[in-house]
Length: 424
DNA sequence: TGACGTCAAGATCCG
DNA sequence: CGGATCTTGACGTCA
Image (cartoon, rainbow, N blue to C red; front, side, top):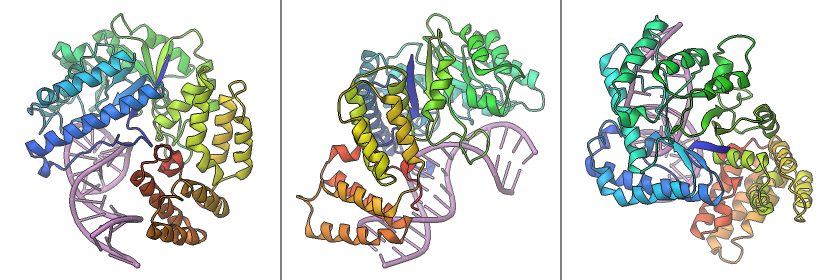
């Protein structure tokens, strides 16, 4: 089983993708953006390898306007070596990647211009995976499309268009149920006719359920039969409902107990699980560390990433966690993450926030300039007057971490917004 | 015609 | 000027 995350990595230096608006999309500018984005992708892949994450979705934004303004640019020639090097790392690590054209790639549209653009878009995505030199188990995930008042007809239009796709696309194509139009039952019907594997998405099935009396595992079993030799392991999408947003909205983070309960239903099944969650790699690592026993040092590394976020919310939980990880004794992953989740659900306490910030400042104590010291003390003094001040204090510390290249801090979750709940 | 979702670019505002 | 915050862009469908 592999567990992974989609598109971008949180708290991974050098991993950001760049883009531009269409009016600035000159050939040379696009080519330089592509070069930058491939460097970022390589940094993400390196991070994945170091952290034992073996499933990843490459962002469609890797090549800005990949099926439009950049479609005819010679990026795969200009960056052939870089692409090959990245592909080699992926394959060498046994990593599985995918891509996922979004809701605006609609193959079954009655508007043939829209459908043609969808074909081009699929071709672009396949070109990336081909450029990386990866096999057909590295998939392209697509939704069935629109309904246009007649679902049956829209489904057969999908089938017809599917027949016409080039092999490079077809061999990678998999279909996913969506949260509005096509239920998992609809998708299984169409996909079996086209001999396409099916990705089951649990949250889409919650907002757009197929029929009563069926649970996740029932559908996952049905999807299993659609995965053939050469497709690789069966893949599913797992996500949780956001506590306050509208139905179908992804949660900020995966709740570890809920996830483990879900996994408990899957015994005897061999699946790859793509998480769809705002905090991306952060939740992926949590889930990976909890489903099977790994090195104790993995937990220590995680604790260093979370520690300041915990400290600024609860010094009691901070002490408990420090105690828990003090000795290399057993493998308390589940307990550790549950406690961390508990801490992160609490508001930041101003007094604790000061302690956490001072702890971080400790990294710069011996190198900061007089102006930097003065600025830090000033921001620290402001802390009691509200949330905006905590934000600028953290931004200030993050800039120092970048300037003085403190890797430990740059990979700390303390600075990133999915951890940044309100100040009490 | 606007909402939907996603992310970063671009624009604007502030001290 | 740098930094923080708000708005726009790019896509297609559907109410």
